[in-house]
Length: 258
Image (cartoon, rainbow, N blue to C red; front, side, top):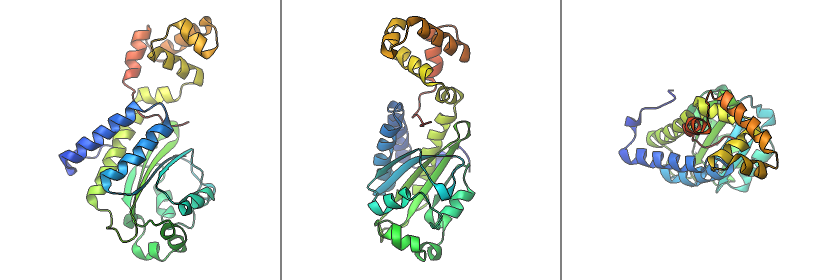
């Protein structure tokens, strides 16, 4: 599966809606909870899915000790929430095929991960999925290896509703690939690996604050801010604040939590 799927498999309207959503997420990019909330509230409309979720997990996830770094849900019932909170997902028939793909980029329907016999015949289906009023689903992963993070999108339909098809899968795959492209840009990776104080200094520069104003905001001395600026200049191979901001402008994207 390619990182950048061919947009030709989507309609012009699908592409416009995907790019509009990515642009909106970039504008909200400093707060992972905020932009993931907008994502899960918007992605359902793209694929006619009433239940959606997004999470960030470590790339070395252990299914026996499942824990999300960040999770945002939209119309997900308590049965799902309780199951997730128990932190052991081994009885889910989707877990083995998901774990076998961990660390790679993929977008699959439920039927590609587990056939109807395995899905509907599992105790998990009755205890969790059906109890929560959910059935067919699409799961999508992208792995940002430099940050050791995986971002997951999940969309679900209610029992009795039509299965997801090729078009819905292509929409989710293309949307997720666009986000992955932004996260993997060298400038984006460099920003996400900056220490907290350097990130705060960058944020002050982007707001147009002077060295003294940044120092006041961070409750440190202007000399310390100057030291942080020099560290940033050296790290990004630039010689001025203007060059630095121009370089970082190419890294606008929704931020992943550390």
